[in-house]
Image (cartoon, rainbow, N blue to C red):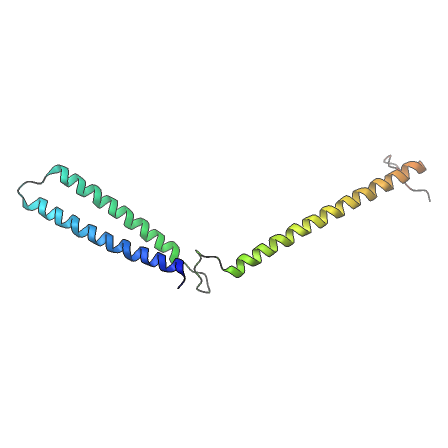
Length: 137
């Protein structure tokens, strides 16, 4: 297990333990409030707020767990990127960049060749039906 997985596991276990303790405290306060004659509306409101917050945190942790628990067909978690895949993508990006540079250079040479060819035709003075100079036969 890597360091990140261990930290996530520790966080999950610690958070679950904290939620359980908070629930027990809330249940105790709820029971205490009910046993002392009349319920105190202020305490009831605070208990409801804390219960809502704990439920919200639990839902978020459950959602995070679901995200981390998804795997691909090989069983590799989708949350993480394999080092070999990252290196392959980086190498592919470098190759694409080189190809673009080579194609740009080819385009520059072709433009120069076209310009040179047009200049030669212009010097010879021949034009085709479209008004473009053509070489002599």
